[in-house]
Image 1 (cartoon, rainbow, N blue to C red):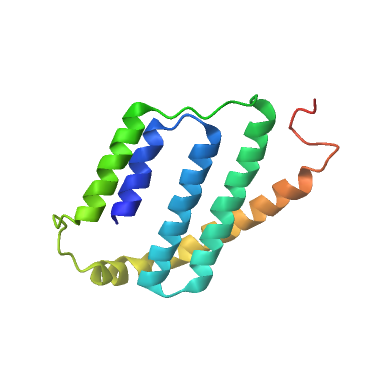
Image 2: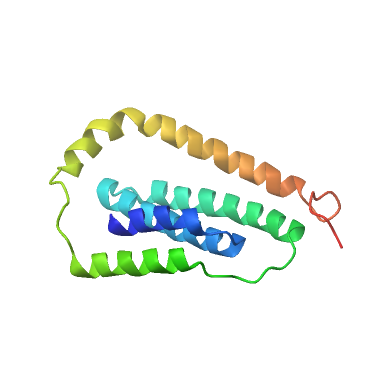
Length: 144
């Protein structure tokens, strides 16, 4: 859970598209691992990984073609916050609430699973249509 909080707060200080994409990819992988751990449905976590990372790669390809090459400049605030978070994770401060997450997952998962599956199927179909429409002749990316 600390890893999730760390990556969600570290995105505030990132300004380079590569660092932002890396952060979103790691956050997606971590969320899918948590989702698989609590639900033990591998197909839903796999669909979440494929959809989110596929969409992020399409957005990243479009951004890279439009933005000129930039060097990655590390912010001093970001490095200080990252080092503090790493120290806090290594110390393992136990200020976490003792909540039975399995109870909440069972309570809410059964009611929203159909909606979530339909949304994921819609996103897969949309991603497939977008990829089939963006061939080399009709792509929205600027060719230089």
